[in-house]
Amino acid sequence: MDKIRMTTPLVEMDGDEMTRVIWKMLKDKIILPYVDLKTEYYDLGLNVRNETDDQVTIDSAIAAKKYGVAVKCATITPNAQRVEEYNLKEMWKSPNGTIRAILDGTVFRSPILVKGITPYIPTWTKPICIARHAYGDVYKNIEEKVEKGSKAELVITDKNGDVQRELIFDFEKSDGIVQGMHNLNSSISSFARSCFNYALDKKLDIWFAAKDTISKKYDHTFKDIFEDVFEKEYKEKFEAVGIKYFYTLIDDAVARVIRSNGGYIWACKNYDGDVMSDMIATAFGSLAMMTSVLVSPEGIYEYEAAHGTVQRHYQKYLNGEETSTNSVATIFAWTGALRKRGELDGIKELCDFADNLEKATIDTIESGIMTGDLYLLSTLPDKKKVSTEAFLDAVKEKLASLY
Ligand code: NAP
Ligand code: MG
Figure 1 (cartoon, rainbow, N blue to C red):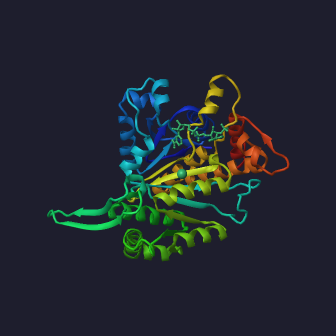
Figure 2 (figure 1 turned 180 degrees about the vertical axis):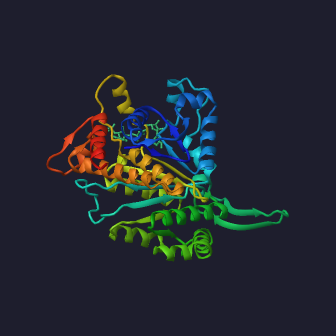
Figure 3 (figure 1 turned 135 degrees about the vertical axis):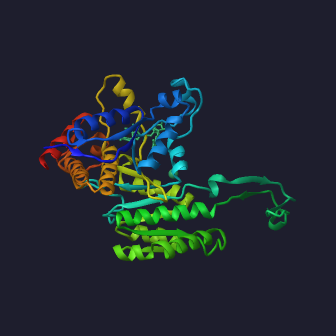
């Protein structure tokens, strides 16, 4: 078979530890034999970030903006211990945070479902994809403890210096607490556009929820901006592909999610997304089976696994011990990116390759060959735990049978 040719490069962001090991194995064993891979390579491994004063992360995000599609390996977000371990000049920021800020994007996470691993909510037969607005609210708040006898007021000074004052609470009878938070219409509308774009891309309904009945200005603004962006820019496109935008109150949304069969995107305000994404990930089984894609309002896509660098397994790998690390989310990051590149450039073989590789991966697990994390969860009668490398070899073999 001739290798599949690419016309535009994919932005490749390499990473750290066990996922870096998987990255190379996956490319060498499975992708390179089929695809004449064209990538613009950025090494976001911690040493290179340190050597370049993190410029490499910024450059990779700018490249993603230029080419439109990126695939990223998990990376270490340094803490004090990593600063020592890697002898870092600084405690560099989270690469994901830096890339997200440059692309102004929203992260969508979806579980990969396989037979033998039943979600804790068994009626969830289709994935629930969750999107979190990653700006503002309680994550950029100002809060104070207030002494009894104090008054808390909300003060807004406009551009002419005119002051508007409103009493929040008079703490005459007790000590208490007070909090100020904000959001930006520009950020909310970017979030809405990313969500509607992704819904169109996946041809899935999208739900959004807030508490507009209680929060008549703050949460209501989220509701209004979503509705306005939808009506003006997306309504007709949604009708054309037969998908729906659905708004409801957050408590009603939670009740409907539990009763649903899945198969939609759930857009969440920042705090709701923080909490609900952990619930959804746990309910579907394993973080190692969760894919993640950052989508910008202009439609730039960056694909990755939702898990980290699996440090504990990497220690074993370095000691020469056998590891059984799940590569599924990393495989799906690559298939997501290759398929998107294929769609944008009109290369059907590349889209087919992505479909086949996903099928081969799922078929491998459903035939009973899996890594340790899934082995513990799977109810298949004939299951076998294999090493990191043996799993990729089994996927390679299945893939070959599809060509
Ligand atoms: P982690 O790498 O996600 O791993 C936590 C634990 O989850 C592992 O020890 C392992 O459990 C299990 N696990 C996760 N992925 C797995 C896989 N593919 N196969 C099998 N088991 C898997 O999270 P962490 O240990 O908190 O973080 C490690 C590093 O990753 C940190 O430096 C952090 O900054 C970074 N991180 C990066 C990203 C990103 O780049 N997007 C996201 C999160 C964390 P057992 O050990 O019990 O087998
Ligand atoms: Mg959380």
